[in-house]
Length: 330
Ligand code: HEM
Image (cartoon, rainbow, N blue to C red; front, side, top):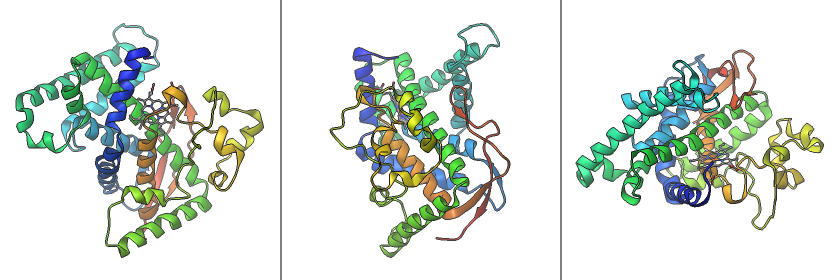
């Protein structure tokens, strides 16, 4: 785990990368475009793996913002393949012998670094004359311009950001689809809320989602922990308080509405204090974009039973297979 100056420096890089302006423009536009691309292959009755679609969604968004690589480019597929191998090695026994998960993860890291290196060389060669780079100041560009980092440090920073920003959000999206599948009342209430927003936008002759739209998503939206609360917490234990376990284990999105004790002190998925997750706002935005388009364009049902397990990360053993059916609310 990073500490001291290294930790401070990573936080300042991430905060710069996730500044409000970028979230409201580049990230939001990318999330919408990626979602449209994914939905273009979801035909009536298609069987899709919600887990894989969620993985593609957040991976494509993060890679676009980190490296300015588009979903259709061969590099995207290569990065995804190698990244998946790398992740398998994260919780593996560190046994560097041919064939082990750890060994494969190190090989994949090398291949990913090669791609980063090629990108850096391209940019050094083209400099500011390449309009594609100027158009989009991605994280790699920012690191090259504002730090004295070499390939290893740039690679680690990009990978840490990708890990923090991709795995978490994609797993949260899968859980969202899973729990909503079993709660038609919540789907109905959400759909009404999102339809209301879309109709208002249509009257104002707007089609793209804007940041303000999220503020109007009262039921969809998170609860903000009031400024000034002092909390010293063991985050896992907070979620396992036996007095609340029965309530917390039950999917009940209405618990966040109105006044309830639970919302303030018993739910801290983004941690807190000096290590509070800097990507909380980004992940909420991505989840809302995914949900917005899913709700308004499709109904879905689980094609076969699948349940989340945690080994060591949240996962769906069967990939959360769902059947989708197009709707025509828009
Ligand atoms: C549902 C999605 C997410 C969840 C549940 C989540 C959760 C967390 C938690 C609990 C921590 C604190 C870890 C600790 O106390 O040591 C954390 C830290 C962090 N998260 Fe997230 N996160 C999410 C999305 C993101 C996104 C989209 C990014 C974007 C890059 C991100 C980047 C980071 C980073 C860089 C840290 C380390 C902060 C530090 O050590 O100062 N996370 N996250």
